Length: 84
Image (cartoon, rainbow, N blue to C red; front, side, top):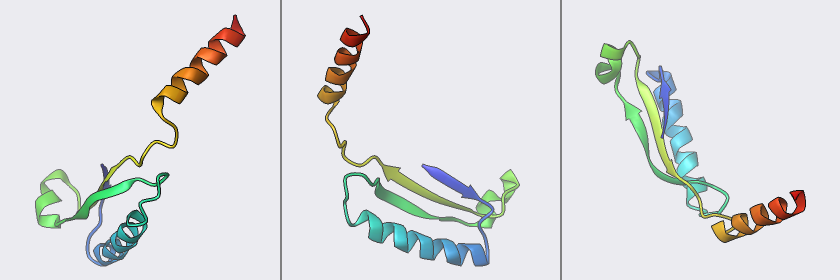
């Protein structure tokens, strides 16, 4: 989850465009890219109490692992053996 504080007015419109791009890229489902779970904007009226003028956010999930965890264990074991 990432927050971008201070996004209001014109910046909110730019964020909406950016979010559209992020959705298109996430739709490719490339294993090296994170998936987009949700994104949006929180109005200034909801963030004013925190001293923030609006806030944009995006929630992503990790992409698929390029290498399985068993490969990581094998590599660690090889390194340990070579270092002995």
